[in-house]
Image (cartoon, rainbow, N blue to C red; front, side, top):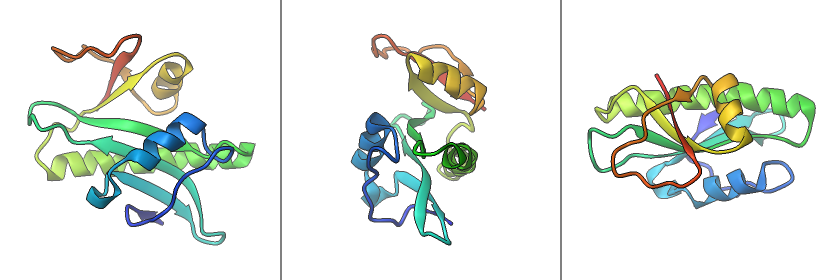
Amino acid sequence: MLTSKLNIHLQHPRFDAYMARVINEADHGKGRAIFAVEMVRYEVIAAVSYHIPQKAAEFVLITGLAPRIDSLQLQEEGKACVLLLKACVHEIAAQVGRSPKLGLWASGPSVGEAKQVYGFRLGRRPSGARVGGRDFLIQE
C-alpha cells in the first residue's frame, strides 16, 4: 500500500537515523511524506519526503529517501519501494504543474546510492543555492 495518510514516526534501527528524522519532520498535514506499507505485517518498508518550492520554475525537491535497513531482504524491498514512491512524487510534480524533473541534495555515500540505485545524476546547482558540501542531483 502506498499512502501519505499514515500517522507514524520512523525509527532507527529500522531506518537510517538521519533519514528517519527528515521524514518525521516533513509536513504530514500537506502529505509531504509518502509511505510504502507491507500489508501482511502492516509495516512501513520505505518512505519518501518532498518539498514543493514556491517558485514555479524550481524542481520539486526530494528531501528524504528512506528504505528499511534492518535486514538485507527488507533493504532490497525498501529500495524497490523507494522507486515506486519516487514515481508518485513525479506524478505529484506533474499534477501541480511543475517540471517532471526532481531535485535532490546529497553528500558522501548517498550521492553514489542516489545515482546508482535511484537514477539521479549530477545537475547544475540552482542559482542562489548555498548548501555547503552537497551535490545537487536531478532525475527526469
